[in-house]
Length: 128
Image 1: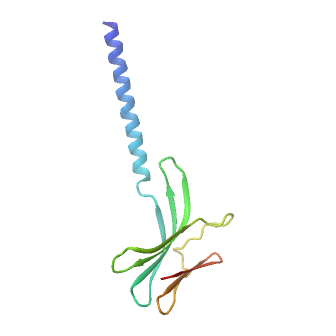
Image 2: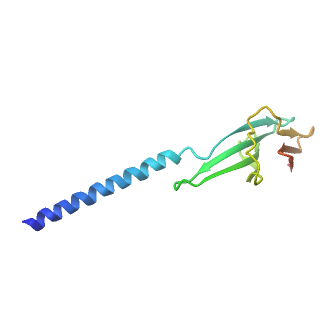
Image 3: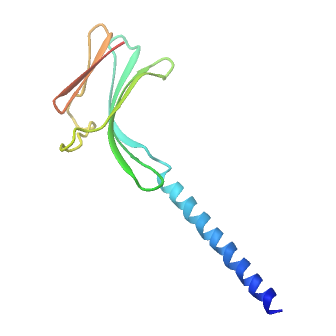
């Protein structure tokens, strides 16, 4: 009889432990679900075919590892698909540049064949 009680207690402890672990995993998944997060600015090309986006991004994985980076992309406005996307880490030793501020980061050429992204002394030109 004692063996049955001990076995039942062990099963209860095991099931409760599994439920608690599953709950913790689910809670952590809910916490990291919205990542990556970002804010920035966008500007349509002069001919209206494209839209350039410049964003400061933050990502966090399940284990709590965080990464800040910049995402520069050009979208085809008709399909909403990315024509080009560049992700780059910040320059070591410099603070993150917040692209949602008032500074103008995106500059299109008059013929919409190229777009420049300029921030923190860097200028990146993408030809389309």
